[in-house]
Each structure stands twice: as structure tokens, then as C-alpha cells.
Amino acid sequence: MKLFSLIFTLFLFLVLSSETKAQETVKPSRTPEEQKVFDALNQRWNKALGTFQIQVVNSRINPTVGVEMIEKIEAERKETEIVYISLRENVRIMILPNREIQKADFTKIPYFQYIQE
Image (cartoon, rainbow, N blue to C red; front, side, top):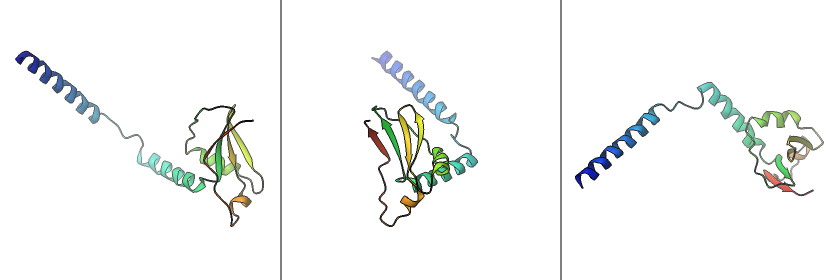
């Protein structure tokens, strides 16, 4: 029984010490400058939510779209027409026009939509 206790204690010590070392070597994921850029993009993304929609056509995949896409969404937005940006064969972003968004009765659209065509 003492041997088991000694082995268990040694095992526990090794696991805990390796976990501590792993925590010490973790580097921050972003520099302060990168974090500032990310925060600005994230703010723009949140403000634009409801004015564009990720659409998956004839599929059930769940695509990931990063906040850096907000620059392309804003650049492609038109004054009076809906624009579609193709991300993949069956994934696109629908971007509502400025005139639609600025209407007093504008209702935000869902972020994500599955479409069967």
C-alpha cells in the first residue's frame, strides 16, 4: 500500500509540475497593437450585425467568418442594391444596401440562414 501511495504521489507531482510549466510558457495571443486592431474590427462587426447575413445554400455546413471580413463587407456595400459576396461554392454573404439600413422602420436580419435553392 505504501508503494502505491508513493507512486501515486510521484505521478501527481509530475502532472502538476508539467501543468505549471505549460502555463508559464503560454505567450499572449496578440500584441497590444494587434489587440487594438482586433478590438476596432470587432466594434465595427458588432455595429454592422443585422445588416448582412451569412447564407449557406443547399448544405448544412456551419462556416466560420472572422471579424476581419467586416472590411470587405463595408467596402462592397452599395447605396441601393443588395450585394452578395461568395466565400465558397455554397457560402455567401448577403449585404443590405445603405438606403435600406437607414430607413426608420429597418429591422435587423438574422446573422445566419440556411437556404434551399
